[in-house]
Amino acid sequence: MRPDALLDFERAHPRHTGAKEVAIIRDLGLKPARYYQLLARAAASHEGQAHDPFTAHRIIRRIAA
Image (cartoon, rainbow, N blue to C red; front, side, top):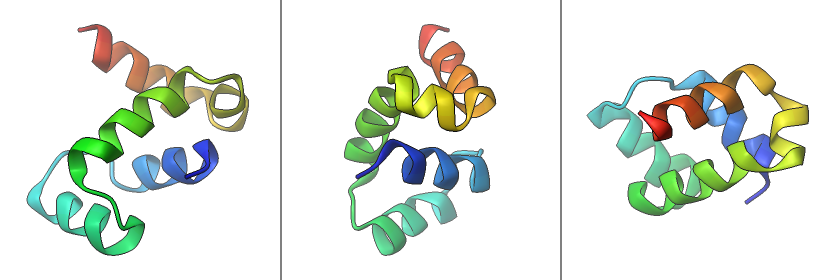
């Protein structure tokens, strides 16, 4: 899954809810735990930070907290 697609999805669904988990499975075909692993990697990547620096840095800050 491409970093830009993951960050776009996260920007559209910023809060962790049950509906977001359903959307992760339905729209991305991933289990939520795998989504968050890939999302962290996408946020830390140069490609992800270039695509959407605001969302990437928000994810990095959330992980660090």
